[in-house]
Image (cartoon, rainbow, N blue to C red):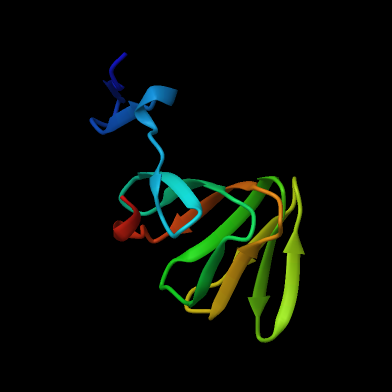
Length: 120
């Protein structure tokens, strides 16, 4: 099935993404993801193998991450914060952090603003 699009009353496109539209692609070694973005915000979904790491980094985008399965450990200012299923971490713009999974696989979603174009 194709992506379904419609137009709302203000003349802006509203897009419905079917599951088949959301193909996973490589992110960092051990992680696959998809992304959907608008002009000012975006959502990403990640599936990560155990022992996967995103090296220390920062970005202009604010990041809100919710773990669906497994767990993620974020390191911010030398503090370890483990986020478990149903829990959320909110990271302001330009905060230096790194993140890794434990030994088990993990699934998580992220909300971003502004859009991280490199993920689209």
